[in-house]
Image (tube, rainbow, N blue to C red; front, side, top):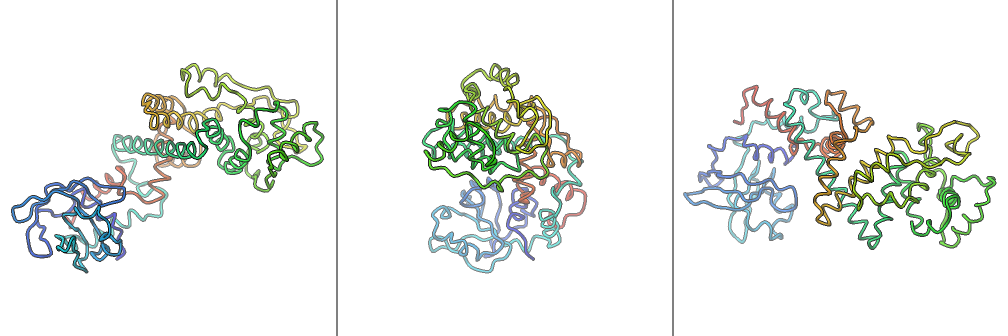
Length: 428
């Protein structure tokens, strides 16, 4: 039976075990006064637990393994963090474990847990469904779903803030360069995010601002590898000079993807949009200006399309007439995926905690994104009204559901609890 350790974690912290019957492997009776706080980082599995053995109360940490021998397999004997482990909880006690030459109290669970119950939980967390609880989730009280969405959203924004900080340090504090790299991947979309980032990292933001608007756009087209050799542009020589000066080589044009994209998402048109946006110094003021005033500017801002791009979205001869340089949907995506994470970065790393509140308020006011993942949530009857909810649900499916972290999810745990409450549970 290949049961994951996380199953035991779930049973332990939800107290779905016959705690009143526990006897240690040496025959002594044990009382669990406090199961401890689940630790998701390195170190023992549960912190600050309390147990009672022979009338004495022990306070410390608890480590859980499927087999006792995993203590040595994981090399805990060389880690000082495990010296304060007061109880070793295992499914199978296949080896004696000592801490500082003393046997550690060990509780073997194989005598108390139904194999059928373990298998049921294991099957749940290894479900092949995109969301393991897709058949049960719409039967839960909305408060459990709401709390988990909020938890996932906070985790998502903290993770993004960490990525921003790492890149900020790596670039020596060049904040504008970090911002335009994030802008580049959002404008590139899911299909061309990586090529856009590569293009953005080929040049430095400050260098591009030294040339005029037309030259900047042609330089980006040239570096992207998408500019046809036979195109007649007076800025062509400027682009070549720029590339030679900074020892830059054009990207391979095959890096860019066109198949399956709407015409407005074709890479050349996205590069044009990117070129125009990064030249707007006002754009970078969302970190310092009143956010409502900045949003008014952002909602109204458009740039005048050059004549060629009023009829094209690529360098092909096929014409497609249009007039809008930036769609509302794209602007919303920039706010959700650039403005909000950078506001949270300010909050987490510059102690401007009001910025985190502003970020959450922005998400609550913006409409939910439209993509396959959000469509899936709606299909299983989860109502998604705002970007606050859609961002939390994206994190939930990408970081929890896809990684089968059902036993670390409030929704998954509640579904299992409800199922256990409806039938005779042999482990209780």
